[in-house]
Amino acid sequence: MNFYLTYILVAAGLFAFSAVFALFAVYAERKVSAFIQDRLGPTEVGKFGLLQTVADILKLLQKEMIVPSAADKVLFVAAPAIIFIAVYLGFAALPWAPGLVPSKINLGLYYIFAIISVETLGILMAGWGSNNKYSILGAMRSAAQIISYEIPAGFAIISVVMIAQTLNLQDIAMQQGTLSPEGVKFLGFWDVSHTGGILAWNIFRAPHLIIAFVIYFIASLAESNRAPFDIPEAESELVSGFHTEYTGLRFGLVFLAEYSMMFLVSMIGVVLFLGAWNTPLPNIGTVHLADWTTGTFWGIFWIAIKSLGLVGVQMWIRWTLPRLRVDQLMNLCWKVLTPLAFACMLASGVWRLWLM
Amino acid sequence: MSNKALNGFKTAWKGLSLTISHLFASNAKRKVIPVSNDNYFKQLEGTNTIQYPMQVLPSPEVGRYQLDVEIDDCIVCDLCAKICPVDCITIEQVKATELIGHTSDGSPKRIYAAQFDIDMAKCMYCGLCTIVCPTECIIMTDQYDKSVFELKDLNYEFANMTPEEVAEKKTLLENKLAEKQAAKLAAMNKMEGGA
Image 1: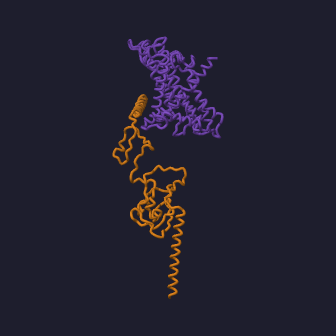
Image 2 (image 1 turned 180 degrees about the vertical axis):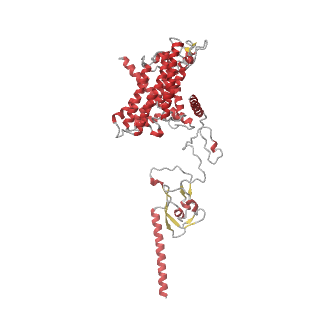
Image 3 (image 1 turned 60 degrees about the vertical axis):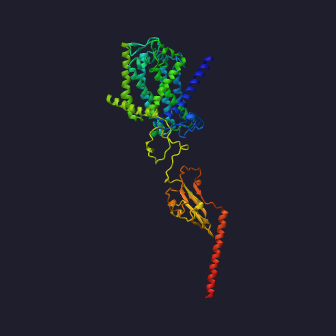
């Protein structure tokens, strides 16, 4: 019976994490955007406006949940839950520290990519169920975009998997540091198994993985519907796309899913390319920085810092680059990223066969 | 093709470096200086936001905002109501039977203002009324954030007479007029009788 309790605790912990993260990510996003545009951002609620998003969520909880009379009630009501649950389930397979992972599955990466694709279904349901032309346009765009960008993202990931030879995220994480069971080579020639640190990260294991990381990062922006790929929401054209008709808690869930998705894709990127929970500090001679900064607490610390860093980059990009047009979006995906991702996969095969 | 991609990265980086430089730039709060200041348009440091209720940008002296009437200085000449292009001023005059007093600039007051309403919802802020006023009792203040919950709250009433006072002054005036009329009639009768 005890393991059921553990399951529930872990699930509640992950939910609490994603909720708290979403609250403060919204605050951070508002502050970052404000400072980028020489404004002040929220300042009134709490010190430096820290409680602004808490006040916002309290307001959202109290609001009436309106279902438009022309809406398809079942789809409309179920959609936010599906959108959020799809993202939330993705957290199950992500490793946080050596030996600390909510669910040890040997198909972890495959599972995550399967489960977060379900989000598209939720978005389509929301768009169709709203019975609103802007919502359905947003949903169609979202589906087209997410499905298209899964291809370059998938192939960028496969090029890592071909190097790592496993789909288990904990094993992939383990390979990128001093704890690696099979040894790590920096760019294929310098054995850094005992040096570790940033040199042992996957992006430095093979040079083409840097390109694969860039491809994955761009595709992950598109998959989480973030600017410059936010055409499904496109405030200026579609009001706010598929979630135009949502109010109250349902809108809150859609928002929560968006911000959890940001963290999720960043964390996958960190696990696959940026050393997962491994420390960036290498062992130098007798100064064993890497060994000193490896452990359960340090693991959580490093992976959180790295993921939050990537989330920060996502925000930075959002407040800099203008939105892509639909045709530019598809051009970039099919004519640039997909061939490049294929080339990376090919390079991975060659690398694995002849250089490792 | 590769040139285009390179250009894309270069221009994206240019934008990204611009935004990050602003992200980590000084976030000093804005100092409030009036528009007439020479440095007004040179304020490039720090944030741009004026935190309105706490910080207020000084309004220029010639600015045209809410109307205000110093009713004690008003001689109820009705010029402002006549010049108003949108008829937002409503004045009801009651002539006094004797001199009421003097305004602060020495003009004699001979008329009571039974009603002096300005409907700011109709006002077009042209400022003509302030120009024609002979005693300069109607002015435009520097108040500009007037928002109300009821439309009728935008109708400012400046007359300070109670309805009883108005009624009293009206009867006085009627009595005076009746007296005058009676005197006139008596005089006419006398002339007719004499002739």
